[in-house]
Image 1 (cartoon, rainbow, N blue to C red):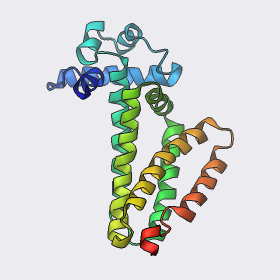
Image 2 (image 1 turned 90 degrees about the vertical axis):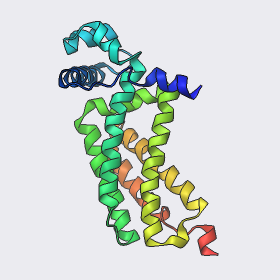
Image 3 (image 1 turned 180 degrees about the vertical axis):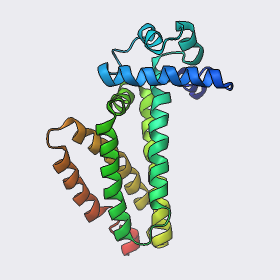
Image 4 (image 1 turned 135 degrees about the vertical axis):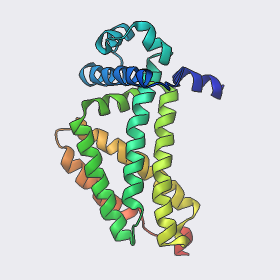
Length: 211
């Protein structure tokens, strides 16, 4: 069953030649534009082909269905977030610094959403498909592993199952809070409150370490 899910939302073929790579980029860039304007559910494959100025067969050559396009765009966003987080936490020296970095990451993440309307559309698109939702959850886990590695370097005694669950939860909620803020008229205040919650509880001693 896992293989079927992977095939359903994966690229049918990976381009190798420069011309094919450029054609794939044209399709994805056109998809991002349509999603920014209308959302995932309103996007049609024929409309996408016209916008990308490619034959409809070229779209299906790479993507078996619309969910595969959303996955490809989601992967772009997720990789950028994971790379940015890893770079920010590579040399962290204290929990106070880590908390400052998380606040800075939230600000960066929020700005990315506000400056790229396709961001929100793609992430919202993952909410309507179980296989794509799973990708979103896996992404949260990968960001959580970066936070866990920072904890492991700073205070190995904190690296227990409770801290693992906590970083996983907070990682997922950071994305949810930012999407809520983007959709709200009071987004910046929402994020400031969320930062206060993070500062008060993310790196608080777990019951095992406190004991």
